Length: 629
Image 1 (cartoon, rainbow, N blue to C red):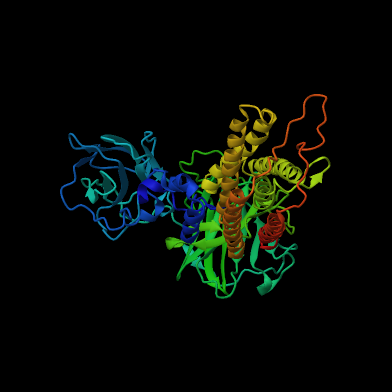
Image 2: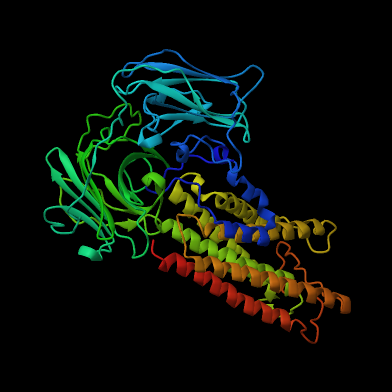
């Protein structure tokens, strides 16, 4: 469900979509390879939290193939007054007809005179738990929508009037169910002073002189990428210059040739080196139109702020020399902060801050999609705009990259090999330090898997410092995988001796948990391949798909061989006995080894599969390390 299943479609500097988790083709592959994880995949659309920004203009949900109802809507839309004055408060009530309920709604105040004007006026505030405000047209809290698809019968909303905008009318889209909804429901006309204009907007002028590196480190501070570049060799440029009570900024991003024109370049001013509580400035382009956007990163969610509130003026934006670029002036201490209630949303540039640099692709209206794979980059030291210097930028994803690498080693290489040994090499009677070789490989590999899993889990928590919605199902399957991996050694510690009556309980539990952990681990790696934080090249994904297909084929062949052998010969019991306290057991069992080893096929398969697993892991790590971040 479009409205029930998504949240804001706007993107912060880092991207706020919990979206872009996996492409449709990868989902299909997952269904084929891991039917076990349908439950996790199904939860992708289980976030019913209101209308997204993409519907701000037309105010209609994109429920494919479902038309808007043309009958009289079973709802009453009332407003507490027939007129408004600037900053006055009106109360709007949405009430379902007797005996009915509704699940969703979308409400805006629009011009009652100019029907072509799709600007949302005013500001919703102090809303009940069943409603929330969203930022249409880059104006804070300019529309209201539901927070869940629970049945509702009545909602009362507060709306603060804008500066004079002429007569306005509240426009409502009303969703009784997913398949039954009405649009274009109007309140009575609310009279007001003035005429309908776009509020709180600063004109965006055409930039004539291209952004360049002339004077960097001398007359202006700069960050450039690649480091040390000049002129057209620079992919990204940010400059700043102190100007009394203001700071003049410049931004440029130059995409690769033939990469299209729908791009954005952004600068975030932050109190630390992490996303959250940041002031963000961006110049964007979509098709032939350029835009300038200012907003506040409230954790992972962007909160658009008008240019006047953000203290920005003298805005120039253009697409020149194959690059999106802009120049703007920011007051060090903005005076007009409006109704922004979050402390730190507007940064005081008299203080030093970290700078975060980003770029990416755009959506309709110049709205920002997730940041590109090489960003964001962060200044490791704070930047004082009063001091001219060259600013360094480092990747903000180091811990994420290490997490991905250690988890790939654990679950693509070590875990499959450990379980292959336990399943197919038990009859191979080679000893290693007094214990069967297969058991030594199995135990040492699984201990390494547990240790690496704990390491990777800790690293990603240090990176995110919170549960990350943007990780999607990867976070759920990963957490379950680590939990199952930790359960294995606990069960092994308390297992019965071989031959005891209850030993079968451990055997089945150990194998079941092991198979679940391996399946979840491989699925988690697969899901992680397309998380925007990594955005790995496609060849890493197809390498993993090839490995999984080969692993499945190998298992099928080995199982057929195993069944054939079980019908022609008695299998040797290779269970590993436990050591009693103070007693050393030097061999896995007391039966003499068979005169001839008949498992050469399994051993060969093990070595081939080991080499392929190592190669696949190395390929994934190469994508993590070599592919630009």
